[in-house]
Length: 116
Length: 111
Image (cartoon, rainbow over all chains, first blue to last red; front, top):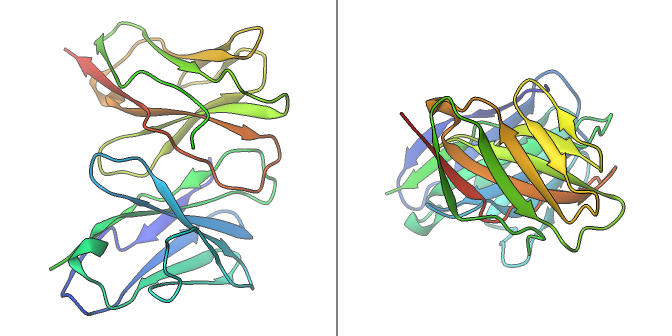
């Protein structure tokens, strides 16, 4: 199947700093990518939909100024957690569909953020 | 909200078949049934999906009832590496949208 890669896989940062997470589709192009967040022992919750060449669409309750999403190309979307605080510590996961849209969503390996 | 209902947890003996049920009684005619699994601290992995016919691939089989209100994912010979949370999701065919994850079933494969 198609491969989605995230970087970094884990990051530890100090409170107040910003962290950027990259999501790349390695062998396909994706006009749309999705960013999820997962807290311990909970399911995945959609944060935002990232659209290539346009603004991201955020889910209710997700601050767009805090979670900056950029989808500059058909193979790369980035999520920047600005002024991170300990409550932002979570597992962030991206996913994408191929342009063929055979139905499946392909997920990255996830990025674990720990804010001290 | 997720449109599926799954048991919270299940156990399975290594080498035996794991049968994971899912209820989706409000499924629409254009919605597929998808199965994903998530091994601890990894991103979800696609397993299989189907519309109304039974499907089989190298990972699993998907059995969908004739009325499409429920389905069963079958792992024919479970191994310890199959221990994961399994998610059953319904989504329209050709959808450009995301998938909505419920709580899933925590499958524990025991030696």
